[in-house]
Length: 99
Image 1: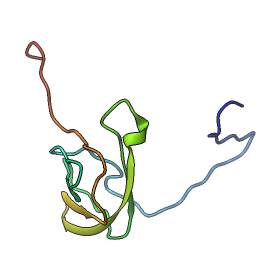
Image 2: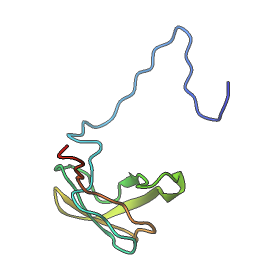
Image 3: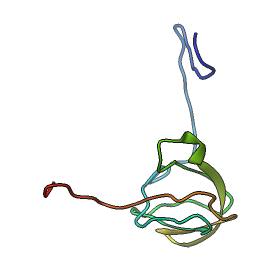
Image 4: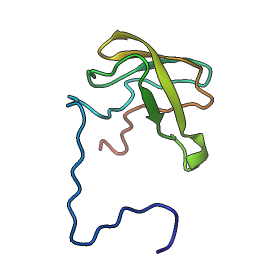
């Protein structure tokens, strides 16, 4: 096997349990600039204070991904993080030739 990530089973059953979440991921409704600790989300979420968020990179560099904890939930679409973002996380809808 190549790499260091894998989940391999041979004639087995994988049974994973956890709390039901109405949304496990979403996108940003507006760009979150480096230095801010507030995320504005596109969809309502039921995330809780203390949970860890993985924030994907907006560039080709995976090094711009971040993991931060939720410090406060202002409403179902606005989350305050425990620390400031180190990188810009871009969010926009772009059209090219009307598409």
